[in-house]
Amino acid sequence: MRLSVLDVGSNTVHLLLLDVYPGARPEPYASHKTALRLVDHQDEQGQITDEGRDLLTAFVVEARDFAVEHRAEDLLAFATSAIREAANGAQVLEHVQSVSGVTLTELSGDQEAAITFSAVRRWFGWSAGRILDLDIGGGSFEMAIGTNALPTVATSVPLGAGRLYRAYLAGDDVAPPASFKALRKHVRTTLRPAVDRIAAGGHPNLVVGTSKTFRSLARICGAAPSARGPYVPRVMHREDLRLWARRMEAMSVAERADLPGVSEQRAAQVVAGAIVAETAMDMLGIDTVQISPWALREGLILRRMDRLVRDTSNETADPKDLVSSP
Image 1: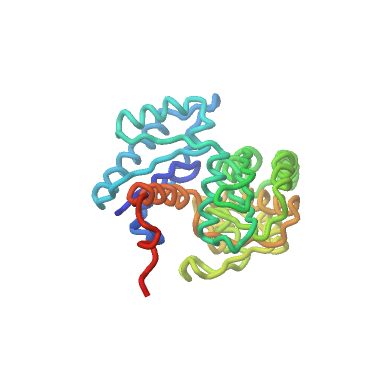
Image 2: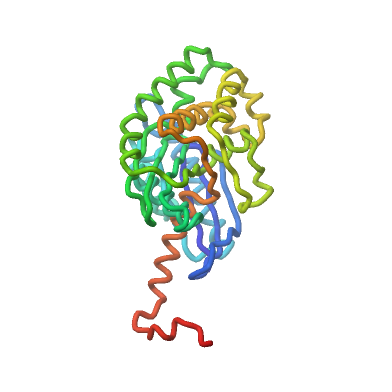
């Protein structure tokens, strides 16, 4: 069957269609997205403006119609930090539902971390041992660690790349050193309680970075481009990241946009994401991060697939029937 998942994030609203079958790997079929940047449509009281609400609603309608046109049988729709932290987030969700008929489920930060972790576990398998996953979004930064399908510890902090750029670096094409110093201090202070929680989860056998910011940073640091496919190992070393973070501090937004793996829409904020990633790796004593092609959207699809398997399985089947005859 064909499933679709709609992700309303801080930077983009992204619809992903996948062909799924019980027991098989989900195969991407089509993608449809827009760089809405909901966080730019908030007023001084932290409310999403009517314009932002209407732009979001219009794209949800467009995404719904795209999914129907391409014969998707189910639509999973969710919203993350841009909605859950808006003062009028509940009212925006109600408006979207009343106009489009699509119900956006609001995920907490800890839920984001746990669902993303489950996708990472499925990608790397049980042989990876204890996994630590790091995920930087536009509004928040999630971390999760564990040895099972779900993490032992999952946590979220308000250290998204877009949020930090607007708070500390916006207004200057090249922000002054004092702004970066203040940003680094804020990131370290905010991370301390979360880092202590993650450290209590044990020493990881594998550290993974997920989502667009980590993919972009790894590409800047020399990882293979996306055109090489999902099975090419992609790693990022802390020393390379440290070097590039300092270089990007001295670059203009246009110069960052020319870096490999950096889109024009994310060029301004990528340096803030680099500072979060570098600081987290430093505080956790991590030298290398491996990039996973699967993250939150895939985690939601995998959960839906698991339910399909349970719904279609024959609970009274003879165990012998599950083993092929010689």
